View 1 (spheres, one colour):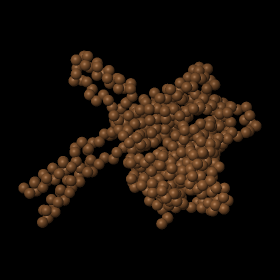
View 2 (cartoon, each protein chain N blue to C red):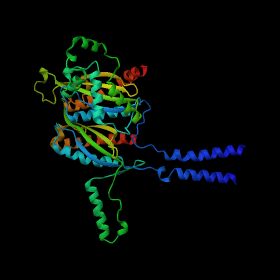
View 3 (tube, rainbow over the protein chains, first blue to last red):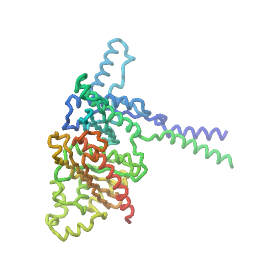
View 4 (tube, rainbow over the protein chains, first blue to last red):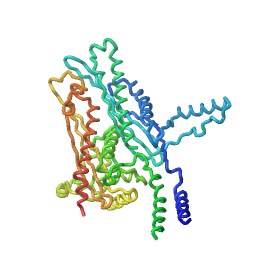
Length: 201
Length: 264
């Protein structure tokens, strides 16, 4: 009897002192911004604009399945979509399907910065190659204290698929080849950042 | 009698169990085991100020190198100190350092140094001689700011404060008769990056100052011929920042930490 009583008191004490919710803490990361630190490039400006979309896409897929973390998009576009969804459900008479927490308050914010995107031409007697190098850095900021919590950088180097430009440029056009290689380089840089961030979580 | 002890142990175990399960480390906490370091400021106080974009890139690369190293553990300040106070501590550490040369500093830095030491100080040859003798030895910053550094250290549970001054980054185009017709991107070039870092012991206020200078040509970094004839200036800068931040780390651990630890 005494044994049971003691056990019971121990259990009660533990239940009171530690709420159950703390056992599985989840943090939300908002993939927010993209900053361009590049002032001089020999790559068309369209590449710099495109890099933003690639950043948002790849970072959200890289951090998607990580334990203890959920990624959210706190941008205007996403909140507008949530509000539209709410209106649609109300119009169709499904008030139980309305999303209640359509405003997102992430714990951490993820910013990416494009540091460098340049193209170099490698020439030899036999062939010509394009090499693109992309450098990205990313900062994770605590949304409450506004302190930088973690930093990760990635570099991506992509060649023109080992093809000879002199011959294939006639078939595909040189712009097309360069576009493929800078897209690849940006992707490589961002996946490297994703891997580094996953290790830090 | 044994029963009571058994119960006591049971209670202890039950009360401790949820602690192990509930304490889940917050993400992005430093995993290093070395002394706890608070990154104060990484800025440019050189006479040719770098563009803000470039310093930001260096800031990120150096911080990442510090975070990844096992010798230090970078902390996120719980009570973030005032940024103007941090830059005052940084400028004070630069001005008191025996390597400081007024001619190669920017206007802010010169004004601060003159306000601390007086205008005549830097023209006095005897005093400058004494100053040069102190090179390579740890020194102290002004008493008011030592107290401030101590407070910051205690509030955030930090052992050291880290400051870095990216004084200069120069790109020199090399002239070569064989490359006369080449474009600016393809011309061989030499890049020199000069940095000074300051490791401040938060308990005693002693400073370790070190100069890390690397100067490399594009050809040395381009051994594999990956970039064709020569690297572009932008690519060269990225690689140099990475090399530089690794060398700063090496110096800070092998020399800086050990000299500061030996002090009484």
